[in-house]
Image (cartoon, rainbow, N blue to C red; front, side, top):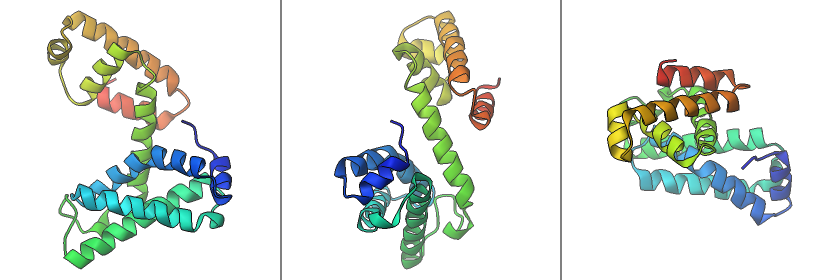
Length: 184
């Protein structure tokens, strides 16, 4: 799904369908972002839902998708920070929540989201091979899991990476990520 500033305008007018589209598009990314700071998935999920409630209650104040996304990430970060301070906890990486580089984390989550969406456009078996490969499985392991030959795995990976490079050709950062992930 491709969101735009139009979604924000519609939300400002009280359009629940547009709000649900943004919620569906961003919920997982916001949760993944939150999990990096706090390992309690239930609390993070509640915090992300609270962030969306805040957006809905302040919907007339927003006019751009970029600003709305930035606000959501900021709300999640601040609420997790408050929660951590109240519990005197630290992030799962044993770093204080304040030390996490906010902008880099948002960029990383959004980049992975774009990559996941690109992978979702690949044919079924190719998609499975790419996902298993991204999770660190070797060609023989992938072949065993999918009950195909190692040569088929290699062929599907080559086709998949080629299609991903074509899909992501306008996004240099994603291409660099692909190169780093898969050693190209």
